[in-house]
Length: 236
Image (tube, rainbow, N blue to C red; front, side, top):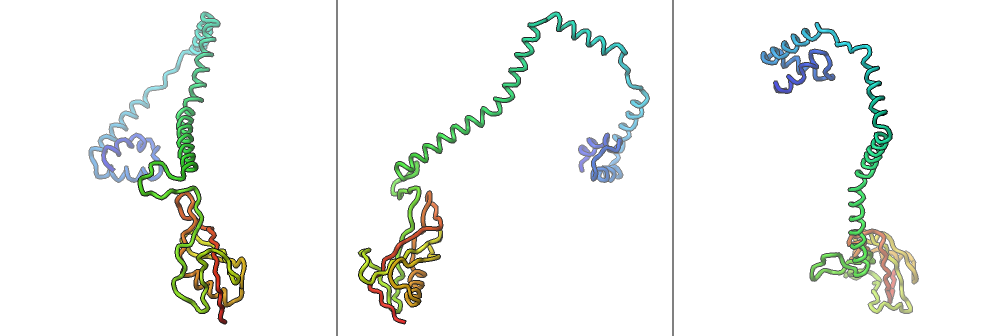
């Protein structure tokens, strides 16, 4: 510690009132610092001088005099004094209650208006405030969708129906997509559901690309995509 910090602690060190852990550093500093030892000696002499003087004893009738003076002041002022005191106390109470609430309430009102403006703009137009040219509109919730189906053939291929119409041998599949655009589960809504068909679906969906469900412009899990396959040829 520096001498300036040590000297601030000397009165407490002399009286034994320093917190735990601070007494030893002060003692170690005093062992090699002569200036701080001289300062400690001054405090010790001052303490000895002050201990020689007794405490000043107030007059016995001092409390009575104070009460009489207060009673006389109240009686002379009467109702005007009491009314003024009530006004002062009421003003202080209202100030202490309302002043801490003024700034948070104003800030909360401004924040609520700002959020309402942003939300109404997004709901009405589907774009964020301050959009720049060539930005794509961002709705509150955009469903997941297929970006590209697996480009390689598999044994007994599953061919995606570009028309979206289920043929006589159509297979409808509902895939669940996570926030990374990966299929985590799927369900066959209609069509063959044997083991060979599921193996083909596993391969096709594993290497297909999906865009995840978007909420406020952020990818979220739980998006669902319905795929229609036709001309299913399964070879065991």
